[in-house]
Amino acid sequence: MNSMKLSMFVMFFTVFFVLTEGVIAQNLPSADEVVEKMILANQYFMNKWPDPTVDIVTDKRRPSNIWTRATYYEGLMALYRVAPQKAYYDYAVDWGEGHRWRPAYGDTWTKNADNQCCGQTYIELYQIDSKSERIGSIKETIDRMVIDDNNDAWWWIDALQMAMPIFAKLGAIYQDSLYFNKMYNIYNYTKIQHGTNGLYNPEDHLWWRDKDFDSPYTAPNGEDTYWSRGNGWVLTALARVLDVMPKDAPHRDEYMTTFKEMAEALIPIQREDGFWNVSLHDPNDFGGRETSGTAFFTFGLAWGVNHGLLNEDKFKTAAIKGWNGLVNDALHDDGFLGYVQSTGKQPSDGQPVTYDKVPNFEDYGLGAFLLAGSEIYQMAGGTAQILLTSPCIQPVEVTLYAAFPNPLNPITTITYSLAETTLVDLTIYNTLGKKVFTFYQEEWQGTGHHQVIWRGINNDGRSVPSGNYIIQLKAGSAVQNQKITIIK
Image (tube, rainbow, N blue to C red; front, top):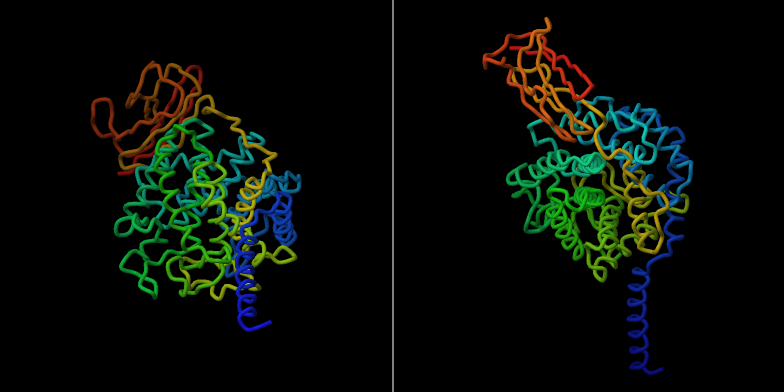
């Protein structure tokens, strides 16, 4: 073979190899192959943690319903819907029961999205079996936020994924736009007010993790620093919110717009191996494969294609590349997931990120992997076998929620819900039973949530003294009372 023919031969096979490698990377696996990988990864974790209620001990002891583990259960529920093994359901129920269906650390007054994240799975288990204890504590926690005037609770973008789907799920179940409106108010504050001018950059269509990374902070190459997993949290939050919000829910269109903008921004920065770097705009800033951010992006892009929000030609290829990269390069034969960055907030945290290194928490990376798999499974023609329903489509008969704040000085917000249109009396009494202030007397009110503000005054408009008072709600034949305290 002469030198010219040899050169052409080598060039032909080089081009063939490159093209073939690209095609292989974009091949959609069968639904059975996808679910097989999901089951493998999940079984590794369940074998490692046979008791779902045992505390997590790393640098300190933490309850097993913190945000890292709660994210895993989001993925487990996604696996259960496509492969409904009783062991998965029991594992999740045992976890919820072990924590008495309460937020992490047990505090229903918490505004911390990390502590509320477990509520996503509690609610999904409630949708399968509508036992009130499964939803009661997380609903109480979110109801307190709904009546709180502050909107600055989500000061880091991870919080959007931790909490937004809870608001959306409650809004859908109870058909109550109060949840949707409050969710938007907090989200929008994060988007346009936290930090310098909000944490979303409308030019790059990506999010700074928190105010510490606002401009003029930059990566070593001079670009803005956008952390992969942080943006993965946001894309996942938007997908999971849109997945359950009614079509006519308020602000849905804005969430869709931002979701599509982010998806577009992710395509040109995806690596050839299907992964995304930890630093999205500087591949040399601790560059390399990273599983958790990649899995969240893969989930979001696949969900967008499956639901008709994203163009199939462009985004389906990216989602498949992401999944194949995760399976071929990160998933071990025993189900362990490599290349998961440990907890942190920026590219430098938890480094080095390698194939064999065990991160300080393995659970959120697996949760993201299972979420991604559930959408790739459906992309491959698989169908969900467990569909979540909304067993309670309106508020319970009559509920008087905890006034907030309490104690007060001198203003508090009173919220209640009605299951049907009825006559309502709402009155403030002192401890001697004397009427102090009347909101409503035999007034017809409709189904849903209602809210009033008491400013610590009597019916004459004068301030009342410090002490204990009673809120009494009469609705039809039902009567509910609640003690509040004024401290001046």
